[in-house]
Image 1 (cartoon, rainbow, N blue to C red):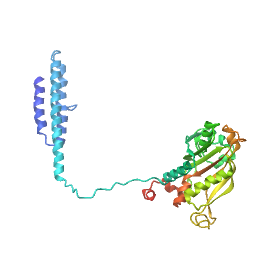
Image 2: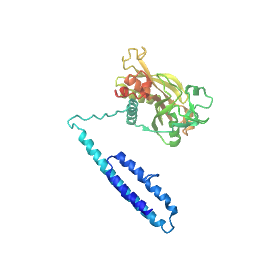
Image 3: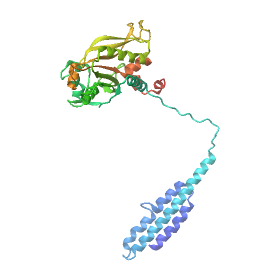
Image 4: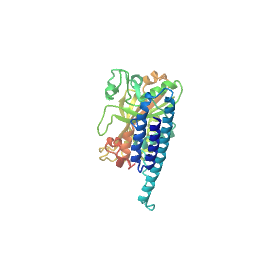
Length: 340
């Protein structure tokens, strides 16, 4: 067996050194060192040796294996370097050709609008607050004066996970969480941007969209403060000549409530296709915080007041950029996104 091993070492070294390609070298590796290779076949006969000879033969076999592996590695390195040099000789690189330009991405229109909204309100002293997207029914509805079986829940087609857990339908739960956490500190002055979820899907609705809601609670807050804040926002967002009007509306968590319209920036309020010949475009909902909401959050509605408002980021983006189909914002078409 010793002679067979030495013969394998001699023969294998010669063939490995004479290999002319990486493919041939791999075949020789299998032939000598593979699971069914010559070295393995010889070692299977060790059972017939005397017990005293087995360690000696085993050590010799390991030495021969190491020798062949070193030879294999050296030849592999040589053939790879040879192949690289051959490739470099065959390929001609024209260093005078212009390089390929790097395509830089740009911010999504929703990101641009969201950053602009945040900048406007933080400039007025609001802070940005955040909350969970998977919300408790209590914070999403009950803490906002929408008890179970209230008809206003039908206005918000919800994705329920359990009877008490759902994907939030607005970012108003953040307002309730912040008020409860800050009680009795004043003022509470926040905006709450984030994703919300409703079962809508068409040219003007999406199952997932973005909202920014605002809240100010303090002593002697009036409806005039609400109007002044929203007028400042509208003029910074759409132009300094814009006007707003407030129409009576209903929201369970505000009283009184108002829909807010902005004078049409396409026709200046004269009436056109964009504003449906009314001169006004609806942009958000607002109102004074309902006394029940203040009370459930730990504030005394006899001593403090507040206002709240909420807007859809997609709605603002569509109006500002003239986008006629909300679904374009989520299709990730580079031709569309590169315009912003």
